[in-house]
Structure formats: structure tokens, C-alpha cells
Image (tube, rainbow, N blue to C red):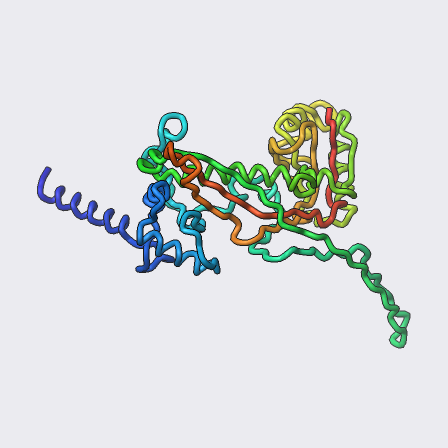
Length: 354
């Protein structure tokens, strides 16, 4: 290797080191939070001085008074690297990195979010979603002196209250020492909670702390699923459109098994094409999810579903005391949310599909 090559390698190494040491924009020159170090320190019951200052600064930025040093609030932006673990519990993550900040909980995994539901975050108090139940009527003027007859719309409210879903994962101090385990734990919990929210939006029981889902909401239209045909899915689209749902927002959602069934069932005569063709049903987009109940298809205008999320979205807590004697840490993610079906008639459901 000649001198020129060695010089280039040295400069490249210096550049990489400079990038690695470059502070995150939102941190400036203040205290830096090192999550791997924080996890290890929490297991010993003592937080490093710089981490403690960073936790206090983050809490101040988010309006949290008297932060608990053993249960720190950690925002999305602090989750960055993905690596490590041992054996099947995480060993395949060694040396893998994800430099981007964490994404919204629903976006990577939620079929409901991709379908276009309305999502609002940062809620504080209990919410009421106003809804027009009877629209006002227009009035044609016979001539310029004709007075318009008053017509008042009728309003109602859909109440929303926080319903909290959480996930808990225990992992070892050794994993925290040898890897940035918190990012793997974060991703796992986000997947779990994202799935729970999808299930609640579609089929939540409205009991035991769950929101009331679409399939259990009064007023949702229905279509027979027996020998579901092209006429049946077209009728579902017609019923939704007749409820004055925005036509461009209408799409279908079903299970992988129903997709397989309809991808093999022709629209009419032989050679006419299949009912589910290239992810389209009745000329509208069609998606699948295992969160949809068996033998069920939903057609609807998905912006008619409102998902409210309270606070910052996630509360991240690290508890080093649960398995203190065995050096086991616990990570918990909590999300407070509620869902409202603002226009039930904007949806039509076919069940027991054959």
C-alpha cells in the first residue's frame, strides 16, 4: 500500500469519526443521552451525570415536572441505533444499524393508517367529535323578493376518552451492555401496539378497556357474503357511495384467504377477469390484513374513522428493579388513544363469505 492510499484511508477514517461524533441537531452542545449507558446505569440504580442532565432537559422540553430518574421519558428522536443481543432472542441484530429516527407507531405496520383513517395526536382532555346528523335544506327563490326559509342542521357529538394499551418486554443487562438493545425492544413493542390498535379500530369490543371497533358500531351497512360475486362487491361500493361518502376515498379491506378466493373467482363468464385483480376490487383499491376477522370484507371511506392519541404518544419507562437480583431490565411502552366511527353508513361489511 503506497503513501497516497494510506493518506486516503486515514482521511476517510477521520471523516467517519467526525460524523460519528457530530452532535444531533436537537441536542446542540448540551448533555447527550447515551441509551446503552443509561440502561446499564439504571440496572445499578445510579444514572450517569450527563444522562441525568439530559433526562431533565428532555422532561423540561416536554413539560414534565419533577421527572423520575428511574423511569425517564425518552422521545422518539433518541431511538436511533439497532444492533445486538444473544442467540435467538436478538443475536441476529449484531452490527445492524438504523440511523433514521423512529417513525410514527402506525405507519410501518397499520393497514388502517394506510387505508387513510384520520389521526390526531397531542390530545389532552376528554374529546367530543361534532357530527351533523341532519343537514340543512336549500331553498330556491321564486323571485328577488322571495325570503329564504330557514333550515337548521342537527348536530350530535361522539365522545372520546383515553383508552390505554401497553406492552412490556424484559431483557438482560448483558444484552444492554453488548448492544443497543433498546432499539430492538422499541421496534418489537411498536409492532405489538400497532397491531393492537388495528384490531381495536376494526373489531374492538368496547369493553375491558378497548375502543368500540367498526364491526361492532351501529349503523354500518351489510351485504351477504354467501357466494360473494362481482355483483355483491359492486353493491357494497354502491351502498357506501349512496351514503354520500367521498368516492375517491372508497377502498376494500379483507383477509389473505378471501383475496385468494376472489382472485380465483371470475367476475362473470370465463375469461372476463377475476373479482380481485391486481389489488383492485370493483375498480377500487383492495388491501389485506390478518387483523380482519375470518371470512370478512369491508368496503368503506376510511377517513370516516377518527383515531385520537393523547399526549406525546409513547411513554417509555425502564424499570431495573423487577429482576434486580438476576440483572433483568424491563421496558414498557404505553399509548392512550380512542377511535370513533364518525359516519357508520360510509362502510359496508360482508361476513361469512363463501
